[in-house]
Length: 74
Image (cartoon, helix red, strand yellow):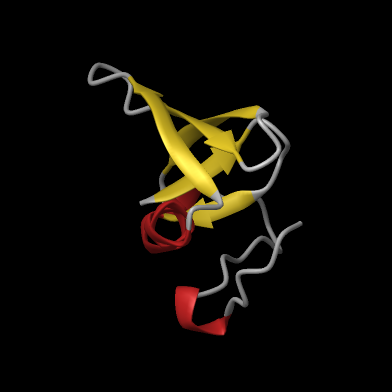
């Protein structure tokens, strides 16, 4: 599943998990009904992550695979 953040960025489920594992994000809340997740960033900001089927991604949007991402503070 792909997620659109409240800042307009897109993340794969694996990318989100890697951010949790690295400590850059912490799970905050989750809606079983909608699949939305809320996460807290290292800076203390709360992001909303909304699931988006890959077939509904805007043209030109791609999500980087987790192994291609260097997890450095933003």
